[in-house]
Image (cartoon, rainbow, N blue to C red; front, side, top):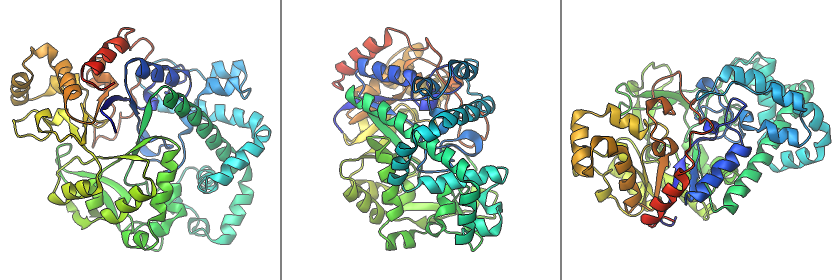
Length: 488
């Protein structure tokens, strides 16, 4: 990864008239902005269909695309929707996504598109389904979810819960039309995304995708491939994921995802992970491996526990897995999300694997020895103002402690109202290979533009742009800054 820079903005945060960011005109306009601003990277969040809390990190499939991000205007241009249907799908424009209204609106819209295009595009959909191994399993899972009133697969009748051959055959027959719908929706998603990614790459903009280390228990992945996870005979997890108390949460975080059967996965050459990265290659040019420290050691909590404090560290797959992924996919640029309380083992794994780690400026301003301060960076790293789990720069500065403020003012040498801009310049000017800032940081937005607050169940993953939020002068200003620090 050459010396360069980019911007972090979830696709769902793009502006538009249909309740959530999509892969249509606004996405292409944002690519144009990145190109004009001299940015080489667009970092996004996971693009899967979301489960509980609308979090992209609790997807019901690690392979599928989020149907809500399919652009309705492009569907209309393809003859799948009438002008009246398109207009009826518009939702009030706001800085906040109304997921309830979105779900009701978009489900009906996609059903209308399927009614027109399902038979018309049958050959193309069949070709897509044949070349994507996961689609039919995902479609059956989603059809069964609807059939069983959205209950988790663990609560389905035991024959389909346990995927007996006769049950699979029966439900595939009974739910065939609904399965066709979900296959068609995935065809639409990946068709639109392929065009958007090609457009971005043609403009010199590459995509950084995010690979969550874990998958949701109630997902097509766990239901379809239970052998990959530590589950009992009924499919319930024996141990679940989380992290111990840390900077974000004094009680730790109890994520609740099932843990992998690493011994079994190693025995078959980590085939499931190879398929995951193959899927990611269709979405992005670089992969950020979320919770990288979990590959060295992972926090395992008894499934019956109500707090992450009850967990313990277990040895992860380390280079057994990373060696496979880097050798199978030598053209993929990986980024190690090596945040949290790190051990010598994590540092050693990152260095042995050759992956660049992350430095977050919002964690930096405590004392001169802090490794997140720019003067302590190794060149082989990625510098961020903050991640999707952090406040915006302005929000961070507003809420900083007096000690942090005093050190930051001394370090930057600027007045208080100029600190966020000064921190951006420190990141751009650092030796880090790549510098990534949240778009909100260039816009000077406060805490109300934050994407996620870890450990808080409600109100996250909902912020989005509105038309006019990006000043017309920002692209040139950012281009000049990027050139000043040799990141063009």
